[in-house]
Amino acid sequence: MTAKAEQNLSELIRQKSADLGFSICGIARVRHLAEAEAALNKWTASGMHDRMNYLTRDPAGRADPEKVFPGAKSIIVTGLNYYTEKRQRHDDVPLLSVYALGKDYHGIITGKLEELLEYIKTLVPEAEGKAFCDDAPVLEKPWAVEAGLGWRGKHSVVINESIGSFFFIGELLLNIALDYNKPLVNDKCGNCSLCIDSCPTGAINTDRTIDARRCIANLTIGNRGPIPEEIIPLMGRRVYSCDTCQEVCPWNRDAKQHEVQEFIISDELAEMTREEWLTLDNDRFNRLFRGTPVERVKYERFKRNIEAVSKNLPSD
Ligand code: SF4
Ligand code: SF4
Image (cartoon, rainbow, N blue to C red):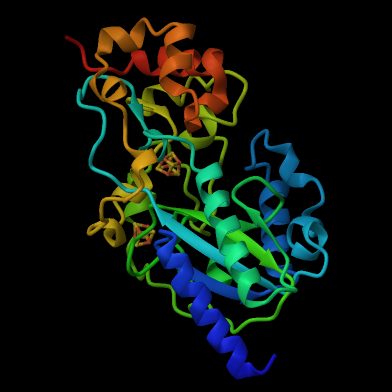
């Protein structure tokens, strides 16, 4: 394919990704992300990955898309906005992270990426690809940066100049060459340190890494053990993940409402009272959270979280 043809094809792909509802899209040449592998190794060697031991297995493989999709030449990286103001109604109840208010995003994103792949095949019949969203050893944040979607903020989340940081990342690996976006060279955090200063548990290091042993996102989800006693008073009402470092970020000041019907909070969840939260049983948990990100932690771990934050709820 000529450079001009690759350029046209990339433009059609970016347009189709917007038609499918993705908020942003970038394309990068596949390579071994040696610098991301080194950063991952340094972080896990420090012990800050907590009990996420899967991150220590095959770091070289994680940094090399060839290992998960042999013949990969290009990676399309998409972002899907999930920001919303439609949240839980009561302010004395355990608080869910914004991304966990609606249905699970994994299937929605891989479904859209598979549609994108089908479209690409109509243009290039020999094209083959594989879609991922959080479910494979692909280093999604470094790839989002590589594809020009944004930069890693001091809180380590990727920030896009237009839509901020409340977006899910998806990837489509392809066996064809395309025209590529350029990574942003400039860090746009500047002198700001609002996320570091606002983190309730002091989990954000000054080198753009997170100490997962202190981060509420990890401690309420991936962590299967007890929540450390010294962290509980710092959690406030945060029962499932935490949005604080993103909420305070100036780049999210103009975050727009998402347009994904499935992400909208159900009336039942929005209206749940403190009493209902504190007496949540297994059956209601299953009914409320089936098919949502919260389902992942199962009832026992979620109950552990509710019990932890119940100590911090405002008194009657
Ligand atoms: S998610 Fe919450 S606890 Fe984790 S780094 Fe951000 S502000 Fe801190
Ligand atoms: S709050 Fe400030 S330092 Fe933190 S990610 Fe946003 S701009 Fe960067």
